[in-house]
Image (cartoon, rainbow, N blue to C red):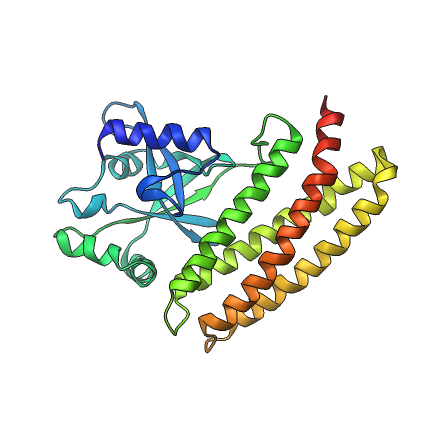
Length: 279
């Protein structure tokens, strides 16, 4: 893509915590910063991605151009990159997938979006797929300027992902695709990890330092248990090979309603407290 267009997307992405308009609106987008294969200069490129459990996948389609994109050559030469997902920025190891794994993953991508097949049909090269896995250790870096802003940014990321999955479910056919199944499972794991972190870290600390918040934290604890039950039911449903999109759609709608109420209550009750404690 032209440099000016890329820079506009990068600026919009960073200014709006990952939200952009234009051709990327409503999709999954990261900013991928690689090291130039020949120059050693750092380059940032907006790239679409696919969830894949503990890693993400990027596809070097270049719109079906005859040559691999520069960022792919950079990753082959220097298989470390910086990933910005709109909330967190982290270092990742890059692995070019090959053989059966590459073909299986690419088939999943095509099932989710036939545009990938169109790109492959336009070029004689085999379009590469690259897995990016975080190599960060220790707790994540807080994304916001304040603890309260960090909580809100993380919540908004879950809201966006739920919105994307709901849109994908609405557009799916009579069979639940493999990639859509993985998108749902990745969301489930992300929510579980986030709530576990709050249960083990933030909530106990607030109980120690702000005992008057006990009723609020008791309610949030109960909501965590209720959401965990919904996530477990969604996982069980996804594990059934005969599951149709309609059944998943109903469960995702239930999860969306309960999670939105939970996130809104937590923001109303805890964000001012967290920011006051930090100040």
